[in-house]
Length: 228
Length: 187
Length: 202
Image 1 (cartoon, rainbow over the protein chains, first blue to last red):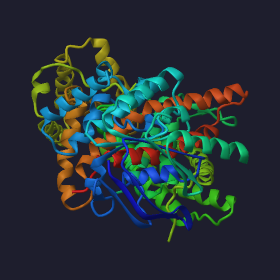
Image 2: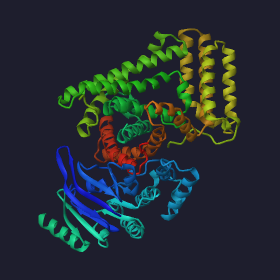
Image 3: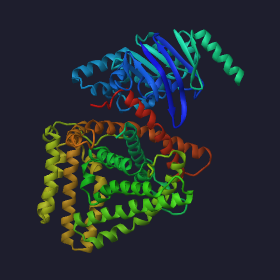
């Protein structure tokens, strides 16, 4: 991946949420940590163009998230905190097909791509079930399928293990490890990102630390243990 | 329409449908159960305002028309639009529109709680009683040929219940506005 | 919950285009209003009832489909008969029964998906004048069906919380938390739709 934040600042209702920052992300596995309200979710949402910078610019694989919004958006997929809110049609198969249908692909291609992604996450048996009946872990896999069916190159996940029991958490961890896509994970679950290539720590709208997981996570622990 | 407005309208439509599925709630002071679905229609206007409120009610009616049993008592299908009481269903759209419009115009964030509640009540009363019964009675009279006086007499028994619902909608609308304000305000 | 009133089958009515069925229903309804003879209206009602036999469902199931309208039709017919004249009551009864029966037939022989396609196509002219986006119709309908069970679960949680604290259910203490918790999820759902490029411009 090649994500560039160039002098990016975000202000919201007179408050500065992200202070001007310049950073380039190219690693295959990147973790983002920080306390609630530190700006990490706002930062991650800019990658998908869900939040637009108030100043500066964000480019994803060369596409500007403002002037080339659709192209930039196609580069990345976003998994939200609550997978329940990510599945928007009643039947899983219809939901997964939705992202492809809006690209006006032929029906047969849509069906084939949906089946392929269902097989990839081994959830073919859930395809015709109602989203309401799925468990938390099943919903998280379904959300992954619904996002990855359009083949984004980068996957951004906002606290993917937040609402899962230990077994489903481990399932999601293994799934993240084996994904061929580049992955950016926001997480309070520090064990999830210890094996990553790079970790950013946010604090009060700034990148406080940036480097190898061991060192950044150690600093995060020390800082918040001391502040408490 | 923004995606957020579309989702808010759809979610409120889902609330109206869900209110038709739950058992009627008894009020302490009167022996009549409150069927929550028509309350939901007034609430759509009070909470979301004219445009989004009206769209959510339209969505409920579309779901009913395409054969889903979304109306209270498990009613649905095109037959509900071919019934003597269809005027009340059509009236729902305007209940949400008028209640929502009047709420937007009359209720301000800087008013006291009492003034807000009274204004919401007036809005819900106009939309949920005056406008709704206007549509319901005229339609009933025209479709059955029974005449306006008869149609009015036949409908009168239900008016007190809807006045109480307007009051509940006003109280609930004001509480929602405090907890999660969504009502569009005059510029 | 939310099971469609559609009945599977391959009758003549099932095979007919949904647009044709809806147009026919509109024309038939208008005709029923111009006819004033009870005997003719009675024949129409009998045809509507006979149509239900083509659905290959039991008489009990037919009755369950018609029950919601039966009472209101009878009440209005009686009201008309008493206040106006017995003849007018009879006319009203057969006319209203025929209307409900024909409408119920179209519902039973048309799938929800077919209806959504018809509405989406009907919305295309409105899209051209910039009033709605046709594809939003199917999306909105899907969203409502998707989230009704979630809201019913929320209602049950609120009800249980009342009971756990020994409180009686009252419409305000149920409706307010139900509305606030539900609408709070709107932002994330809207973001999920936008992030997946489902409502892209152009």
